[in-house]
Amino acid sequence: MAKLQEYSWLLPSSIETSAASRRSTRDWIVDAICFLIGYGFCLVLTYDLLNADFSFAPEWSDTPPWLAWIDLAVGTVIGAGLWFRRGRLLIPLAVFCAVVSIFTVAGAISGLIVLFSVAVHRRFGVLAAFAVAALAANAIFPLIRPENDRAYGETMGWGTAMIIIVCLWGMVIRSRRQLVLSLRDRAERAESEQQLRVAQARSVERNRIAREMHDVLAHRISLLSLHAGALEIKPDATPEEVTKAAGVIRASAHQALQDLREVIGVLRADRVEGAPEPPQPTLDALPALADESRATGAKVTLDVGIEPSAVPDGTGRTAYRIVQEGLTNARKHAAGTAVRVSVAGSAGKGLVIDVRNPWPIGGRTTGIPGTGTGLIGLTERALLAGGRLSHGRTPQNEFALTAWLPWPAEPPEPAEPAETDQRGATSVWAGAA
Image 1 (spheres, helix red, strand yellow):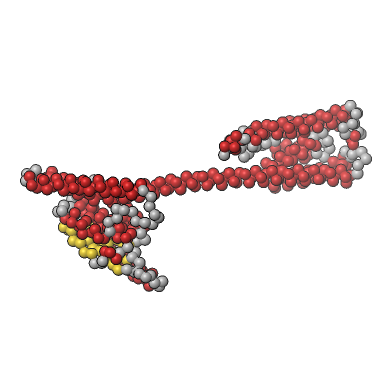
Image 2 (cartoon, one colour):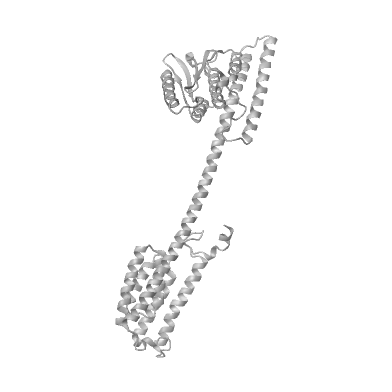
């Protein structure tokens, strides 16, 4: 890229990094050379014809002076047009050259340069039309201005060869420029896609950090809020009760800080793709989680109908987070109500987590602030784990948080898991409905 910037003045404006409408240094040099060659040929040939020297063009020694002056005028117009052949005047200039090519000699070189410009800057259909016009003019030219001592076929043959060479040369230049532009476009798109992937990776990482922070800290902070609220609404508490509540608050705060330290450390460290992320509480930690909620006054009934150690670590971690968020939501929005937690399932059928509590009368809440994204995060967790999650009010006037997580059978059998999964999914959603 550095070399491209260093020698960008050697590039035509159509592929230069700057705006294509501005003529580049290379364009100015090329246009100057084309003007000197094309109009120089016109001046030299006209001088030779008007002075009857014929040392430069003996083939047209019979040219009358009035035709030589017309040749000079036509060559001057085409020569001046060479400075504007890169813009909108290219097609009108090419039409003019196709018309006057049937008799002009002085503008021949300039006319070939214009035809070359059409081949470079216009599509093939336009070039084909002007090439046919040029070949037709080349066939008429020897009849109007025959060359001395040269047959008609020879004059037309040389003219046809030059037209074909100029057209093919221009087509090659155009195809190479289009290749460069396509490669540049691919490089720019690849760079844009890379930046998009980086932005998406950052967004995914931010979401992952937010989800982990919410799952780990929301539970602890809600415990702190409840114990502090108990002290606030009970100013006549005995010193023993105050000391006990302060001890619970201090222990919960220390545990929250420890969890925060562990989460930040895990998120900063590299890990093996697909490996669980510590801290990794699984179904074995559900009794301790229920005891923490009971300590706040909640009536938690825990029913684990499976062997926790038999559940895969990833599935167990997701199930723990679902139960944790369910208990946290119950403390926030239905403090003091009875919460029933049920975990059941089997290998091959899947793991079913069900957290229910009575709908709070009058919408009573604890006033604990929340982000409103806990259930959204749980839904994402369940989907990423290959499961499903639903939540809402039931006809029995309860709030139900129900999830199904895949639990593959060991060893897996090709036919049975799909059928069993389907039956399990049907029963779960039927129960949720």
